[in-house]
Image (cartoon, rainbow, N blue to C red; front, side):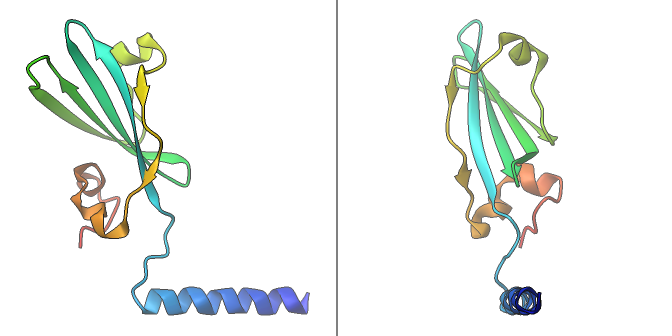
Length: 118
């Protein structure tokens, strides 16, 4: 019991030092994509932002065959009914950690004040 209390105090001290030094200690934010086809010759790409395995923001970019795109940001999880009816996406990318210094460049995160934009 005494050892676990000392370990907890030690971890708290390390967290305090990291915070005092300006080191970001929050869980990392990841981004992954899902791609759906839309007839004729267009597609929808979802950029899915997650933290602690929870979807915190979704960016939807729908583009036509001329690469003219419309973008929509939604806080939390979102799937357009057209794509939800299609089932599984035809293309995906694995989740990648976004470096802390780059978080402010992601409009989906800053639009809903999910990160400090500094």
